[in-house]
Length: 177
Image 1 (cartoon, rainbow, N blue to C red):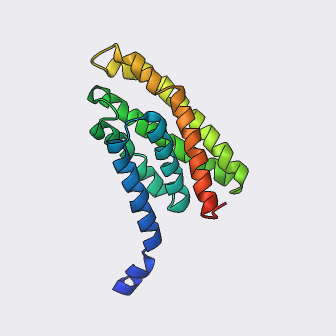
Image 2: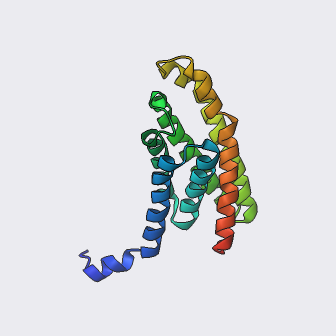
């Protein structure tokens, strides 16, 4: 089938593209300016959820990969902790997929959102906590293992839930719930 220019333009959702670019830009730039896990973490987790609900799962999965790389490039994450990046990316994917699946299983109800956020945050935390032993073997300086364990333990759960609260407020304001 040959697509005409009009058919192609008709299939493009300019609003979704604008939302994706705006949220992905914040996720990209934030780690360059704010170097506090307790501020950056909730905002990034909120962005992951917002992209999921406003643009869709595919776009959310793409954004899952951005913040960790930018945290490394922007100095929020020290260069010696580069081996942690893939684990954080995977934990973000687990977080988003959990929310998506549980929300859909609960017939897209508010209860499903909150259950998804809590389960997703818990699975993210458990995955990162379980990864600490493996990550410790990848680090050049073994004394960093304690620092990595602190970064990748309960603060990940707390910042994910806080991100869920931020995203909930924004989605409520946008009348998505």
